[in-house]
Length: 114
Length: 114
Image: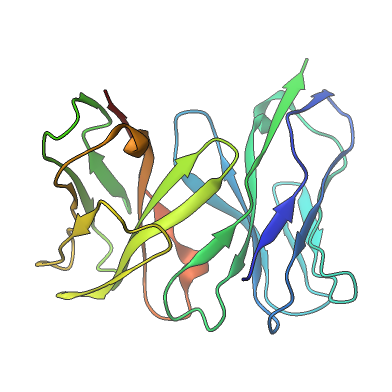
C-alpha cells in the first residue's frame, strides 16, 4: 500500500546547524505532500506543503521540494534554533484524498542544543 | 479562536471499563477524524466522518466506535478497552473533501489501559 518513509531519529543538532530530514513516498499517482510539526505536548500543525512536482513549500525558514524523479520531499533548514525542537512528520495525501486520510511517516524527533 | 478540543487530556483506566473521549471543533468543518499515535508507528487513522451521521473506518478501527450526531462533535468510544489501546489519541477536523492538508489537530488524549 501507499506509504511514507522518513529518516529515523532522534536527530540532535547544535543551534545554527543545517538540518535535513529525509522523506520518500510511494508513487501512486501524484499526491500532495506535507510536513507537519508537533511541539511537545501539542497536536500536529501543518508546516508546509507542495501539491505538484517541482513545487517548493516553505515556512518559518523550512523548505521542501517535491521531487517526482526521486519520489522525495526532504525537509531542510539552513540554521536551526532551539525553538525548532519538535517531532516532524512527513505525510502524503491518500490517493484521491476523499477519505481525509493523510498517510504519515513515523516521525523524526529533532533536538536543538544551545 | 479556531480550535479542536479533546477531553480528557489524560486518562488511566482498567481493562473492560467503557470510556468515551470527546472531541469538538468550532470551525464548522465537515470532516473529522480520530488518529492514534504510537512510538515507531507514527499516526494511524482510526475512524473518520465526512458529515453528520456519515462515518467510516480508517486503518485501525478494531476496538473503537464513533458517532457523529452533531457537526461539531465526534466522540471516540472504547466499549471494552484493552492494554493494546494504550496510546496517544488525536482528533482532527478539516473543511471538506480534498482539503485534508488543512487539518486542525486537537491537543491529544493520553490513554493508559491497565
